[in-house]
Image (cartoon, rainbow, N blue to C red; front, top):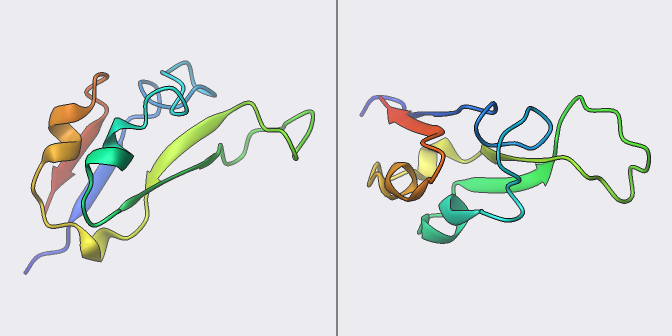
Length: 85
């Protein structure tokens, strides 16, 4: 089986880059049965308080768990997710 590739367009999803705030959406996290995604403070963004970050993003971490169902692509209101292999 070919390796799964999941790409997230952070200009659409990720409030540090002008996209939607993942804390108010997170639909991909809720619909993904194998739990491939995580929501975390944005990487590489300087924060005033690292204990209370204001910029967040979603990342596909466990690609080997992806069953390629496409639910994350369908549910994303920003059309920010693509899945390929």
